[in-house]
Length: 249
Image 1 (cartoon, rainbow, N blue to C red):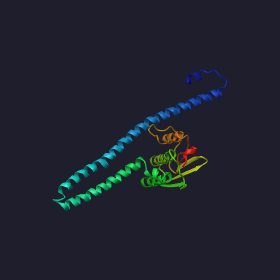
Image 2: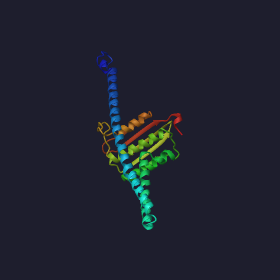
Image 3: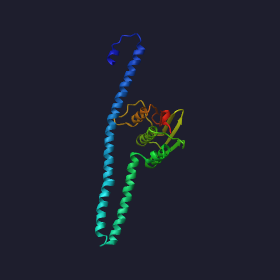
Image 4: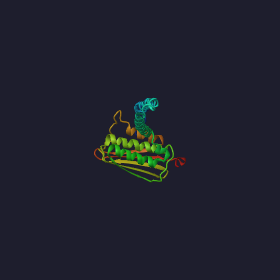
């Protein structure tokens, strides 16, 4: 198709040039999405490996130790009750650590708040954890009564999550502001930081998938994303996703 257009002899050069530009843009988008799909699959496998390692180190090993301790207590309870009691206390401490690890791993995969209480509490938790881990002050502006059904709630949560992850990794910011609103049949999100900024026209690094991931999430729900940034002037990510009539709670 591209070769045939190059061979066209038309006086409407502006129209032909526009068509060629459109094809170039489509080819670029296709290449970017192909790269994203390939890299995302690699990242997914790495994430599976990480979760499997955490399950083994923080759950499988303690459970094995607990089983051995339980056998010891069973065999020595009558002969050494004081030692058995001390061993039981150690087992309870180990169980507490295993429960905490289970909750942490589960929350990393998908916060129960999102399913149990909805988007707003889940995003509030996400912002709080971001501030604790990064030390970056993050403010959240959202209507407490905001409710979204699936898949919109999960998409908005993940976009906020990935946006804050990008800030932590690349922005060098001291402040971040997150705003979520719903109006006119759409839900909108803005994440603004006061970090180092960048030039959106600069080609992305081969392994830098953060912004591309945001675009893909928005695209899947027919949404739009605008990235405003400049070196030394921070970054603002704006996302707008239309809500189907049956998509709101």
